[in-house]
Figure: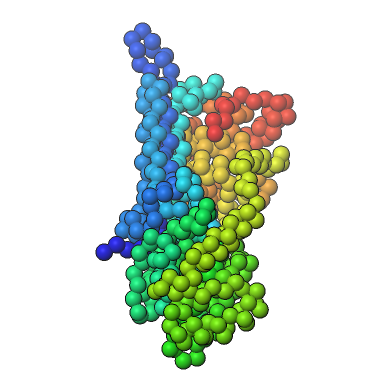
Length: 484
């Protein structure tokens, strides 16, 4: 038996970037071939794409985990790793992507619309890309950056021009079945319709869609009955149609009270897309007038409904009375709504350059470590994630990058002392001021080592800091270029 699923939680993981390669060119009669390690490949993205052939989120209900391929590692001979393939997930038209905090991330409407829900990580640089005048043969490479990972909520909100609203068993499914070729389930008990049913209707040259959504009861805006499962599917409708059962035998119910109850629930509902339902055009369909008592009741309430400014149509799905007039009235209302909408704006690329004085990071006191500090920012956090901490030269290179960015000075201005714990991207260091490679040439021993990390060298931290200020005053800059 097929199922209709209109809300799922999707766990997405983009591909990790490939690691850079550490390699030195070796060839006969060329003892100083130089570094030739290639860069790692980019990780694949997780992409949601609207597919006209998909009508439910059922696939994600059974397979809620989606992971893209990772990038390949770089190789020697300046061979870069291959990029990971993107993972494209087809979703139905009208899918809304919501973050775990309730924020709407994307509203996917229109075939072919795409949204990158998780971006793949950058590939790490190989040692060929890290070579410089002061570091001619780096003994390290950068690690690939992890891809984005997290949870998103997918909600399907039907893309229909006309939404039929009403109490259970009011005849909404029967109305869709006679207006279009749709064949929803029809029975004589409440809540027969548990999922939205879409039908395509033609009225002259106007073609529009009608949605038969689950029945509504008082309190639905607070989740009673099918509650939000119903209201979610009327947010996009251009016209709302009250389908009223004029032949009901339930005590205390009449067409006017039914309409008032439904209007109260529509007004109490807060659409996540920010579209006000109160401003949508309304029509009233007084159903089952083939029953004599129902026809009499419909004639009694028609003047009062007309006084409210509502267009009223008496119909019978059993005898098809009034359906032709209703079909063309709906087509006219939909056409007017479409004409009143502003033309879609062409897609524009908005560039927001960073401020001139924006350092790209911030230094804050660590609330969990007394006397500690936390550095936040895209670049320092990415650099830490790409560092191989088992390689002393890679750690020294990270210190150089952070110092050139201004992190060291910012920590000193914030009151950090030598030995203060500093946390970046979840990694905690004992901060020691050091001379960046951009000021003094790096004195390396074996490949993969950095003499600045020796304890004996660290004892001259104050002298090195003073020398750095003097050299900056003279405008000296002999460091390697910033790759990222």
